[in-house]
Image (cartoon, rainbow, N blue to C red; front, top):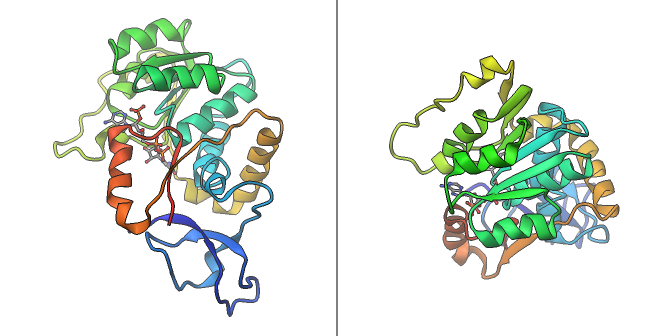
Length: 264
Ligand SMILES: NC(=O)c1ccc[n+]([C@@H]2O[C@H](COP(=O)([O-])OP(=O)(O)OC[C@H]3O[C@@H](n4cnc5c(N)ncnc54)[C@H](OP(=O)(O)O)[C@@H]3O)[C@@H](O)[C@H]2O)c1
């Protein structure tokens, strides 16, 4: 099972790494691993903790960064709507957009998550899609229309967001978690002609395509964090490999807030 992790080097024959170093990489779900050093990155724990290097300063934060600034090209004053907003990528994307001068609306499951977005993370508004009609709530919150929809969820969230696009809006497909376990064929969003009416665009992206530019994102994310405008929230599950399946299911049951991390 693929998994991104943070590890301590026990032995090394690679010139860049010594025993005791902390590194990040694609290690899999395991507590010990023998890997080639070339794909690893040194991690500085004096800058942030290991879970944060997996969260806001890891692939999660980097996904939010390039999705917002490279794909959606958000600018100050934009209204940005985010689904899966209390999750790992969504919570970082919302804070980055806010720090960039955008008006930010989050969609999340449950009152507690919605309150966390506005009260703790500084979102301008939050929608609890589990409480009331998502279409109506999105329409009320969107005002004159959204300039960017950052989608982590797909399904109804995507369809509702398409209905409230402003002129020239950008829809960024980061993911579609509501469809990942579907055993039925996935039906496309019926509101897609809103893209035509609003001269809008919809684009997907994969963070790994930005590999060569990761340092640029990490530098930007670290700077926003130093300004106190980016809080990395990790939901750490202890118990190691034995609890992996349980932890994975938490993502699909909405039991995590922020980045879900399994401690080995
Ligand atoms: N494009 C890329 O390169 C890239 C990179 C990393 C991640 N991603 C994608 O980004 C998305 C978010 O990933 P993440 O790691 O940040 O996960 P996450 O949002 O922390 O975790 C999952 C959250 O999704 C929501 N969810 C789960 N099942 C749902 C359903 N059936 N309907 C609606 N919401 C549901 C739950 O939040 P609620 O309780 O609020 O419903 C849950 O807490 C995923 O789609 C992932 O595949 C993309």
